[in-house]
Length: 115
Image (cartoon, rainbow, N blue to C red; front, side, top):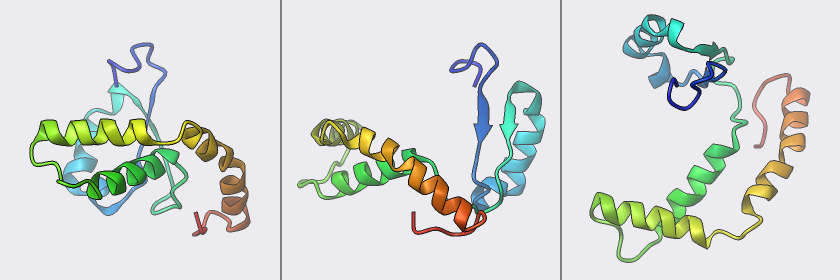
C-alpha cells in the first residue's frame, strides 16, 4: 500500500470472503491497521468490482489455450496475449455496466443481484 499509495490516500478493501476473515488474515490486518485505511465492506456482499470480471475473462481465455502454459513465464505470456486479444472497448463496456449494477444492488438492499 505504501508503494502504490505513497500519498497515504489509498484504502484497502476486501469482500470478507471466508479466507479473508481467517484468524491469520484478521490478525495481520489488525497488526498493520496503522499502515493503511481499511474500507469496511458488508460480509459476503455482491461483487461490484469489475476487476473480478476482467480476471475471470482472462482466466477463461488462458484455460482455452492450446497447449496450456506449463511454466510461470508461459503463464505470463498467455495472460498478456489474452489481454491484448480483448476487444478495445472491453473495459469501457464493463465501466458502462456500473450504473445498472449499482441500481440492482440498491433494489436488492445490498443482497444478491444477477451481477
